[in-house]
Length: 184
Length: 193
Image (cartoon, rainbow over all chains, first blue to last red; front, side):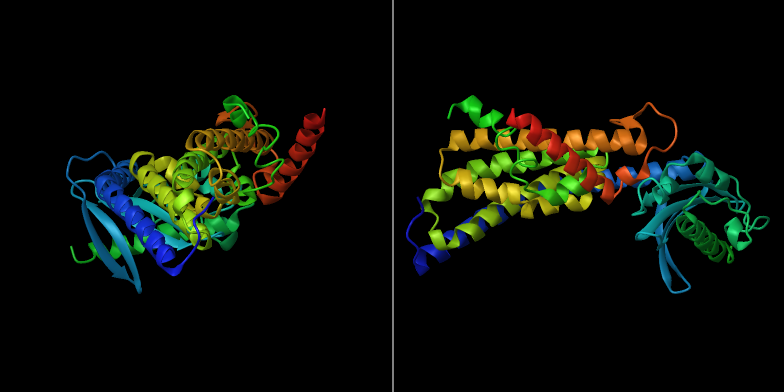
């Protein structure tokens, strides 16, 4: 079946295969770069639309550093801020987008990515009774801490650590919001 | 072997999961639901068919001592290609399968078929072999996914027919081993007849 090996044909065939393969990948990479960028943008835009009241202005992406952590946020004139907040969850990083309107109330939150346990902590992305409690939340009136720790947040059953992380991510976003608006 | 035989053997005689017991990592990890299993199977099939075709074409001229690195480069190329295409056109699917797409490179089924079949057979037969083994793998993953989804979440392909949570263990790793084990027993018992 295969040809007899010697140094020359081994080096030649490997080089050739690698050249052809990298060439092909280069072409596909260039071809898909635009659609991939668009898909990511669409995802961000859809998330912003979910966490803020309807708006017409174009969201502006900016970043800020609060307490040594870097946050990316989207400023939407007339609607508020959509802040991306990432904390350590139960199974890995838990990344949320938190929408806060111009009055400082939380509009909605959406999970961007998580690695929580399926069926338990993963409910933080789907369980509406948990997610919806943050709609219209006033951070000045209610404490963003789970009830077990003396706050006002109802945790997901059997997923206290995930609920704590989710709440912490929102609290961080509120801090970012205060920092953003203190100079206005 | 007839062309049809090359395809059907992937389901029964050489079922990659239940008979060859290859590619266990994606089998156990991605079958949390029927849809995930199906998508993972199709992704693997795509790589399998293309790598089988290319490898059967280049096998006669590849020097024996470097054939494994050459095959791996070919397989990795197709996996990366698939990864880019999925990111671009099916971002939701890419997100669910994420890490397991690049891991197709080290899936024993793909390199196994390249070594055992594609390098010794014609292009047409190798393509058929890729389709057959790929379909077998897809079907198996989907079945495991269905069983785990029904028991673990009370739904099939996302369609919920039992309210509530189901038996959580089946969505997690222990359930994967249990379902795989019992299905393997059942499959081999039926196949022996």
